[in-house]
Image (cartoon, rainbow, N blue to C red; front, side):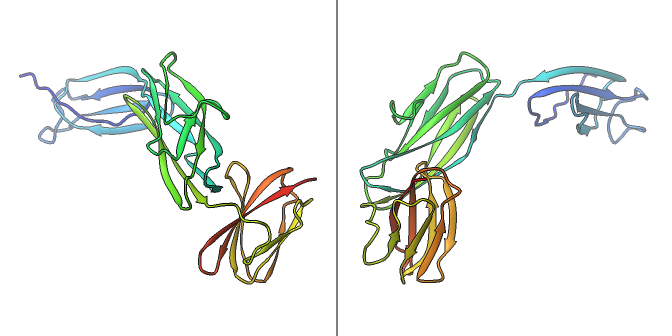
Length: 258
């Protein structure tokens, strides 16, 4: 009699051929001699995605294509570094989508991170991209707004009804960006044309970030005077994040002028 058989394959977007083999025409299964089998093959890569044995007919083949909705982000981590409480910093990521079928929603659950399509305005906790094409390639801007001296860790969700991608966001809020000379350290010359010196007997680690929060260099401190070479970087403002021997954080802005 007629029997229905169901099998699951996990396939991505692409075109495939589903083929049933049973040259003996005696059914497929372990109880039959010379059991046949079925395969799914990717037409582009020729990759075979597995076989099954069961009670099919002689031999038949059918081609089909799948278009699976996907969302992806690059980068998937944004590290803002240190930002003064009450001020803000902006970074961005690229959101791409393929085979989409409906609106994409972008959402930040934290009041300390906001999103926008513009680098200087329109920031809010949520955005949406109405569906008008199945493919997507947009730049999304994220603003970090610390309100106190602590570390912030959260995420930005990018979702549609059948696809999702997430960006992890992190940053450090500080009560202020410290002056370049205080009881912990001194930084000079500032502005600098390339080389900066940091003097302190209480520091153990230095991290350098640009004004987007991107980490440019890290180094351990082994002496009271540390030489930092910024000459390979473009003119602009850079942030030194300084960790002392008690794991407290201190910050200093450096103006690089060439």
